[in-house]
Length: 269
Image (cartoon, rainbow, N blue to C red; front, side, top):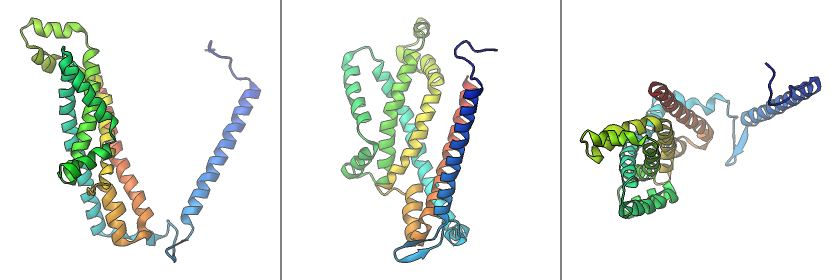
């Protein structure tokens, strides 16, 4: 079927497209080869010659059980902080969406000001404030800051989901004798969650990645365990190896969460 939106490319345009694609592929392969060569080349660090990244001596620490126990401890620290913060963020988001949907300006105006303040402050500054001012410890500083910031985002998403529902949903609940709050919780919230599930799950993935900010406040997450504790224990020659494994661990966790999100989206479609 011939497209009516644009003319089909002729022989000259197809040849030009092929040449450009081949040149781009060659350039990308050359850059990739240069990167591999740079990583494989020995280098001098602190006056000591260190073998290339692909030398087995740069990876031998991953054959020790102590290394993986430390990494597992970092994974548990990351997941425990992210899991609790996610639950608190969803609960806070529900409360925020209720307050933002209130009928009186005495409620909506103050909560809007608070939300704008929370969304305008970097998460790291929230962690430092909670840690230094409230003296809660690193764990609760990370959990509290992530719950506040992401709760504000999820609350706005849920409010948008509630506003998108037909007015008949609320009127039907009120007509059968439910209170406005019961109508919100029993009829409107389940539908809003279904509509906003992709947005909420995407925000929870952001929450999971933001746990790495706990590195700054001294929380023992994956990043701090691998890039600080293990690198200090084994030495800087393993720094890039630890970085690569840390990256792989984060990718596995985030891909798993994304897979669950896609599965939920299909189930709720």
